[in-house]
Image (cartoon, rainbow, N blue to C red; front, side, top):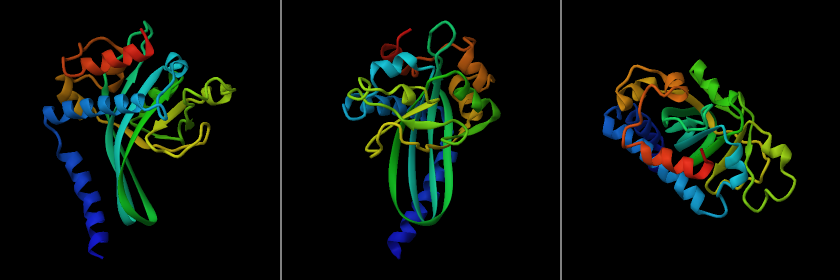
Length: 226
């Protein structure tokens, strides 16, 4: 029973911690941790995103989530979203939240690290309406790995969202859910010292990237091209 209570408390504490992490160094750390997630996924042949997928990429979402609970489950976390602009350059990494609650028998706690590749321009724009559910509002499937892109994956590659996740156990093309993603304008106001909201940060060049986020922009550019 103590273990069950501890898991429930872990979920509550983690959620409270995310709400309390409102200093700029905390937000910079979030961006840096998302960069580390992408680097880790790309370094593992079993999860690496192939060049053919990067060439189709119109946007990128990196999520760092945790899941914990006993009977009542909570999946929370944060992430960054980036888009490829009309001129081919990649946008600032814009902070988002990723939370989801569920009811039902469930015991345990784990971290979930996910990279989503958007293959069209409309999926990232769903966040203009504050939030969207990956897998419901935008169809999401497990993206093909390097060894699979040589086979017939045209139907998979045409999905709006291709999902790559550590130790997902999913095969390419399986429908997946990555939770509810929501805008976090308050965090971006603080990180970028601006009052521009998510649409302006993603699709304009009105805010110059601070030094702390430039490494992630450079890395994505090296993978996806200009």
